[in-house]
Image (cartoon, rainbow, N blue to C red):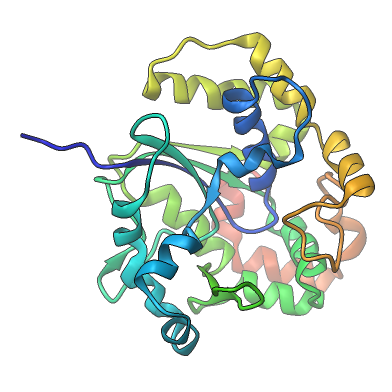
Length: 284
């Protein structure tokens, strides 16, 4: 007898690439029954790893001592996950699809599908630098790093750890990993250009996997209520609960800002280091 494990639909991206926007779109489509603006609707889509679960099976001392040990608990936490209303859940994720010490981030037993949002790395550099209070050169160094690296948030009660890798590694790991798991790659710039059409493609992708009828009116509602204008306006009035308070989370919501901000040498370096992937995605 085959027992179905908890299955995850991953919403993954490098930081500052449109992950939060995609979560709002999906959460408003599936979970906003009242059809009103709710800043915290995206709490229906939790961040992986789930800190409360990791807290039960690891210790703060262990992870601060060696953050890469989080890999020991990736699969175990997916086994322990409590999935509400069935055996499928959406999960936000910035980790690369990586294996550390033979411990995989996930596998086909636990993954139902993957949605990956990718953004022009020249624009990511700027947003990432502003968000983490880095210089552009520091931001570029991380995005183009040849080494696997992590981010750790120790301000919370329990450390939150993400194993990012470079922009290139993060993107290609999800593009090429778990090959038997259905996946869709969404360009941030396409959402900016025509959010309805490209979000429709995401919902169509999900409908084939989850076997539901597409509700075009709900797509329109989700696109309208999740607009960057609405999200920025709400943050300006009420703040944003996922922000660290150092800078605005929803800043510009545009593409091509790198042309006015980065130096020629910075642009050339990024384009050289990430050349093949940028060409493949149409950024060059």
